[in-house]
Image (tube, rainbow, N blue to C red; front, top):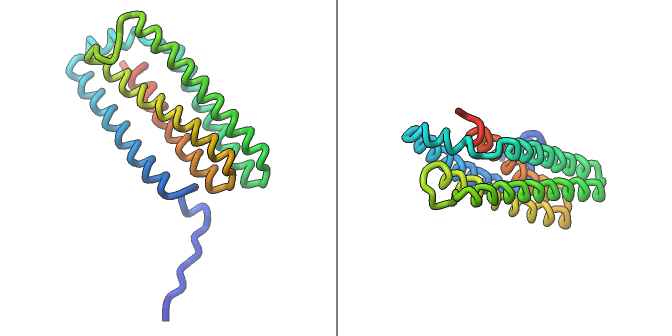
Length: 186
């Protein structure tokens, strides 16, 4: 005689596909490693890092933070809309989230342009090498996230949208740690 297994309620499991959560965990470990490397390098050259950090555009970083957090809200609203059966509204929210992801990339590209004009690049060593590696890797994730949002807008069942927005929220979460670490912490 086998024992009956209790039903798993939606609130007891992670939203979306479990494979996405494995990817998210792996990505968080990679970003965590990058931030640990940043912290270690900063500890070895605190004055150089402070001087370099002062050259960053904090307003652009703040704008990008607001843009990504707002896009995360739009992604969450897409899930809510789709759960309510409103496919068109879910697609509109996903489109708005993706559009704001594009705004993030434009602001980041402008920031990079200014840094390149000031003679900074990936090969500088120290602060700017880590800045470009960490924020560039994040920007690649934003671009990939925009593609994911477009795919789940097309294949728009609730699980797909939950899966895509889980990735998008990881992108938001990483930026919420990267922004203060690179731009603000003194």
